[in-house]
Image 1 (tube, rainbow, N blue to C red):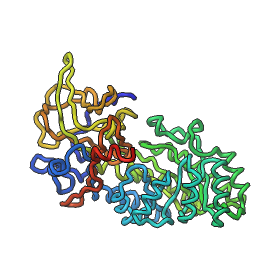
Image 2: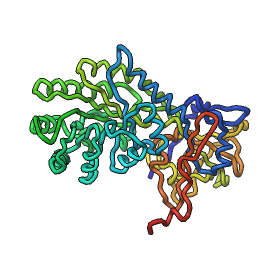
Image 3: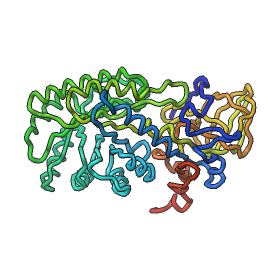
Image 4: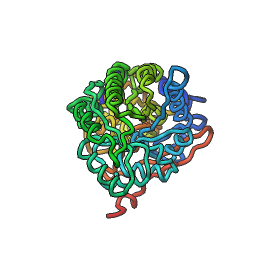
Length: 432
């Protein structure tokens, strides 16, 4: 696994991520709760999410597609970004739909009280059992990713005597840029079906009793910071929708996936209004209902990871700050080389000219959050804040090195509550 690479430190104010994290009296607060108060009560490491920030991000994207220049749409939040039940319930109250990629995510949504008619099922590896359960539940749409999957979907629908609402995920062969692990729209990637095969499958099941063509889907990647790849992909998708309509396969839904990029460190985030203008302008003449699958842009900036300093050490002039969070708690820096800025929760001491590596306790060199990062003096027990941790943080956590997974906390105005307790040592061996 590669080490994280620090970029120039443009991150100077927590409000660069969200105005819902602010300093009051020298202490960082999430909404109206001091992060130190949370850490003192819950311990560290711990994920903290702002309910107000999640709400604001959802409403901002929803508004961008509303109005006379908008298009009928449903935001189907990507559950894989952050699947905590309390987060799902919050978004459901806002009117969100949901995009899932596993039977486990379907189970979570049903526990959260979400209507199946607001659920879209994507993913290249749906099992027969997952397909069967989703048909029984009566979900809104299956995004089919292969001919083999379509055959199983048709067989299970026939066995249950319930038609399956379906669309094909096409691979638009568009390079989205960004990290190769999260780019999904090029022909060499595992996702979707190419145009010719998609055309053949739509026509082969035209008028089918058990497959009801309801939509079409494309998703070109994640953390995309320019509208240009979206513009290319939606144009190709729109042309194909028109072709299918002329051939007698009208589609009700156009699912354009997610991928809207956010700021982690030095990036300029994609303005959702620019994204919406590109997409809505193309979709509006089609008469389709637009489905969107955002995840990171909704929850990413709304979360932080709290961690405390364990030690500082010197090796031949190099300074290491060892913290109690590790790559098992937040894998993105080790896996993607992602840069998540880290600041001190209390009032900043004057910055020194020293640069440090901020590392975790896991026994791998790759367990490094930041390298060569400009940082002031810190001491044992100081509380640090890793920013932009609301998406792909806890959901990708593991028990590597037999480390219990951290707690999750949701802040709502002046109150906070633990929405997932910290794992215990007993939890580590449960089921063994």
